Amino acid sequence: MEKFSRITSIAVPFPRVNVDTDIIIPAKHLKSIKRSGFAAGAFESVRYNADGTLIEDNVFDGPKYKGANILIAGDNFGCGSSREHAPWAINEMGYRCIIAPSFADIFASNCIKNGILTVSLPQEDVDALVMAAEAGHPITVDLEAQTVTCENALYKFDFNPTHKDMLMEGLDEIGQTLRSKAAISDFETKQKMMTPWLYR
Image 1 (tube, rainbow, N blue to C red):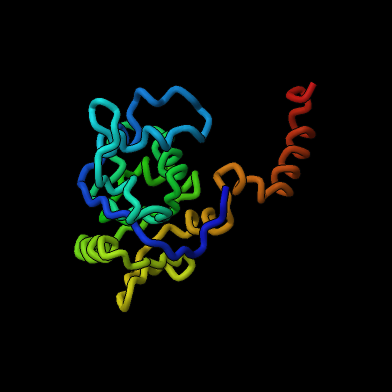
Image 2: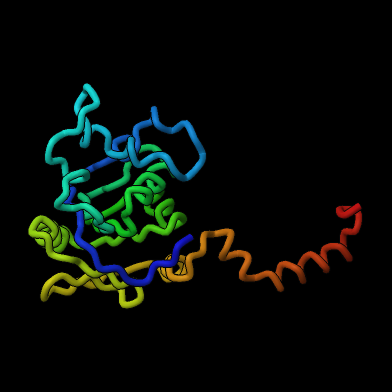
C-alpha cells in the first residue's frame, strides 16, 4: 500500500449528499476481486448517458480537473452496502484523499485499508473548499499535521491515531500485525510447548 503523508493537488468538487456505494461503483461491475478495472464504471450514472455516451461537462472527465488527486464530496459519502470495490474504483481514478462533512463508517474503514485518506470537516469548510476547487485553486492535505490548506485558509481535522499510522507507514491491517513478528514467534514457541498435539 502506498504511503500517505502530504499531497497538493487540484480537487474535483462533487458535493452531492448521500452518495452511496452503488453510485460509486454499480453492482453490475462487481465481477472481480482484483483491485483494478473498476475506474471505467465508477460514478457511471454521473458520467454516462443511458446510451453509454459520456455526459458533457461532468466533473470526473472534463479537462478542468484532469489529474486531480483530491475529491470534495457531500455529507454521508459512501453510505449504502459495504463493498471494498468502491475505494478500489476511487483509488484507480487517482484520488488519494476525499474531503466531506461525514462518511459512512464501513466505507471510511475500507478507504484506510486501501491507502485513501478520508478527511471530515464542518459543512461550511467543505463549502469553501468546493468553491476553491471550482476556481481551480490547489489544495494541500497534510496528514502528519492534520491540516488542509488552500490559498490563505487553514482547516484542522481530527483523525484516528492508529489509522494515521497505517496510512503514513503504508500498512494495511495484516502489514501492521506483521510488525510484531517477534511477539508472534514467541507466542508460537510457547504454544508448541504447551499444546504440542496441535502441531503433529
